[in-house]
Every structure is written in structure tokens, then in C-alpha cells.
Length: 596
Image (cartoon, rainbow, N blue to C red; front, top):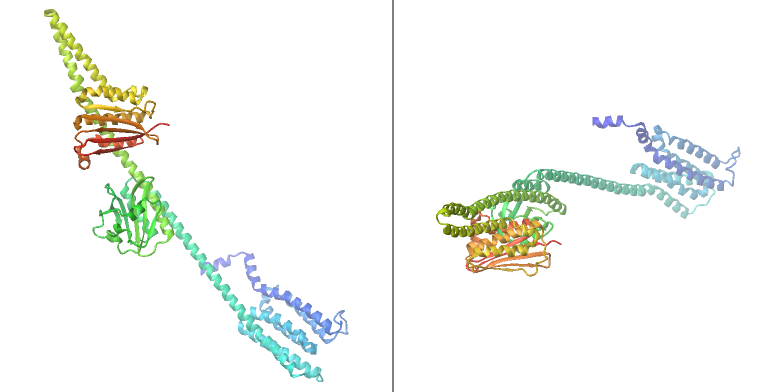
């Protein structure tokens, strides 16, 4: 209250002047209407007095005198309408109008009906500007004075005038009309005011509702900004999903929030995180039904009001008694992480679902970033392990091959030195054997260098390199036949890094087949597809293996053999598939992109 008073005291002079003048706005308009009425009265008076109204002289009739007095009254009250302190007096000036019109009607005599319409102006003013009961009393006053003016003229001025019953009935009707005009007009004005007040109240409610919505939208945007800021600074997917559940509750006070992620098995999800979960819900696995699969592949949120089409979700206890739910896919591009389910006890609004989708999009980006960071760390560990494994393998190959040969060459050289003096013929024979060992060692070293990084891969292409490599490898393959089928790739060019990665994948696949498959045949097939992809198939008819069993123990094996090929293919921009069945051999299919 004090602040309101202080603000009103501090209002500008122009504001105070406007508030002081505002009550007189209706009176000033009525003053203009009064002058229109005076003009009409002047015409009537001029007609009734046969043109004696003007010029003003000593021969004016009584009606002319009353008219000029009324004009002077109008002038005074018109001036008072511009004086704020006189607002109370000006608001009652319509009573003087009624009095002057009644006096002129009295002097007008049998022409009294001419003055009847002029009463409507002050009575309308009274009905609009005064309370209803004051307006009704003003109408009664006008009716009484109008009829009194006619009866007074009949009794006092023209007693000889003949009056019929019809004249009196007409007089009564006009008086009744004057009496009810303020009542009818006041009620209509009141109804219109009520309608206006109702519309104003509606407008205020709509403005308040719009302000509340704007404030809610502002709070939601602030929440989204805070979520984006929080999610952008974390690389822990658990923290990302926890933030998603927590901030979603600020947008929708849900009954249960559930994050379903892929379990790694086909068409299977599990409850990874949740809020208000029932006992036993966490880590529960569910098989994807058709409805859940559709929601997971969708690009936008889906609102459901019945779980009948989602029997998988009915297995989760926290969702069974909910009224509606929003199913929001967690996916980036072609990679789907899972599904975010927000279930409530009321119908979800469209704007709530859109805000949840926007929040989930922030979380998806953060989740994807966390996954990328995790993949990079895992790939780094694999590369380091792979490098260490290659070092150990190279050391073993050098020790078992060239190192042993070099030791034999050294021993042979010492032995030959002793034979030169005692048995030159035997020394020549040993030199021939030494030459054979040196050539074989040189071949082994060159083969190892070729396997590490064949230089001809950059100069003569993949096909020629594979031909020479497989020729060298056949010497180690024993009875296993190695067959290369690559007739249509002579002019094929891949990126240098892709060619190197592909050669290493083929090399590892064939080497593994020679060592472990016990196969009679190994086929290496290369063909170019229509979609600018190169398909490479390495197939053998060996013993094969149980891929599912191998996957379960793969992390414990510490080996990065065949099952790493898919990861290396993805790093090269392609993909790989490994199919093997015990007793039916192994088939490895690799797809890599071809340069334009």
C-alpha cells in the first residue's frame, strides 16, 4: 500500500492532469449534444413565434426569452465542463435541461408534442451517467413536468381549448415513454457494461494465462540450457541418463521414468536406469514387440494411452497402472541406443512431449559423445595391445626364423674356415649349403618385411600385391590350396589407408585359416559392387568354430584375432561379417568403400 501511494505521489503532472480531467469527458460530450439540441429548439422557437427570435430587442415573446436564457445557461455549463472542481455540478446540469424544456413546452401550448423528442437527450445522459434509480427518478420527473406543462397551459393560458380523450391518452403515453426511457436505457447500458467487464475480465485472464505460459516456457528454456550445459561437461553415460531422468521431472511430474538400452542380444532391451521403479524392475530384460520396435525406429516421440499394443512394457511393474506415456527413441543417425519412457497418471500434452523430446535430444548427443569417448579409449587400448602383440609375434618370428638361420650361418662359416686347410673339397660342399641357408634366410626376411608393409601395394595395387603375397604364403600352407579370384579389380583404387587395412585383414584371415582351420582349400574372392563398395570374401572348408561360444570368452582370451576384423573394417569406413559353423568351415566377408 505504501509503495502504491508513493508511486501515485511520484506520478508526473501530465498523468495527474489526465486523471483529473477524465471524469469530465462525458460532460463535455453532453455539452456538445446540448448545443445541437439548442439549435433544434431555436428552429422550433423561430417557427412558433413567427420569426421574432432574432434580432434581440424589447419586443421578444416569452418563449424567445426562455430560449435565450437557456442558451446562456448552456454557455455557462459548457465552460464549467472544462473546470475539474465543477464536475459534481455539471453532472446535474441535465435537470436544468429538463426544466427549461418543460418551461418551453408550457409556453408552446398546443405545439407541445414538438418538444417531446428533446427530453430524450438529457434522459439518455441520466440513464448512462447516473445510477439506475437516479435515472428512473429523472424519467419520472421528466414525465411529470411534461404532462404538467401541457395541463398548466390548458388550465392557465388556453382554458377555451377543446381537448378530447384521445389527446389525454396520447399525453399519458408520451409521459409513460419518458418515464421508462431511462429504465430501458440504463438496463441496456448496464448489460453492455457487464458484457464489457466480462470481456475485460476474460482479456485479463488470457493475459495472465499467457504470462504464466511465457514464464513456464522461460523456465523450461532455462532448464534445457542448464541440462545442455551439464550434459556437455560429462563423459559418463550414467550421469547423462541420471540427468535426463531428473530434469524430465521438472517438465512433466511423471509417475515413472524408465531408460531401456540394448542388451547386446538381438531384439532385447533391459532396464538400465529408472525413477520410481518397482522392485525387480532394474536390469529386467524385455523382448521387443512390434510396437516397441516401431517406437525405437521412429524419429519422434510417440504418446500412448494404452499399453495393450506394448506387452513388453507391461512386464515393467512401474508402468502397469499408468494412464499415458511418452516413448522417446534415443538414437543418433542410424545408431539406436534404446528408448526413454515417461509414464504419468494424466494425459500428456503435446507441448510436454515436445519438451521431453528436446531434452532427450540433448541427452542423446551427450550419450553419443560419451559413447565415442568410450570407444576411443577402448580402441586405444586395443591398438596398444595389438601393437604389443605384433611386437611379440615379430620377436617370435625373428627368433624362430632368421635368428636361428643366422646362428647356423655363423657356425657354418666357422666350420668352413677350419676345413679350408684340411679338406678344401668338403669346404666347397659346406659353402654350397651355406649359400642355400643364406638365400632361405634372405627370403624369410623379405617375406616378413612384405607382410609388415608391402611397398608394391602403393605402386602396383592390391591385386598384384595379393598375388605375390599368396605365392609366398603357399610355401608355408603345406597341402592347403590357396585360391585367389579377382578378375575385375585391375583398375580398382582404394585409399592408401584403406588398402593397407584391407591387406592386413586379408593377411590375418588367411594366416588364421592356415594355422587353425585345417582346411583343404582357402578362397580369397574380390569383386566390386554397384554401390561403390568392394566385397572381399575369405572362405575355407576347415573345421570352423562356434562363434557364440567364442564371443562369451573373447574378452578373457586377450586375443585380437578374427573378431577384431569388424572393428578394423569400420575404422576403414566399411564393415565385416564373420560366419562359422563347427565342421562347415568359416566365411569372412569384408566391405570397404571404393574411391571415386
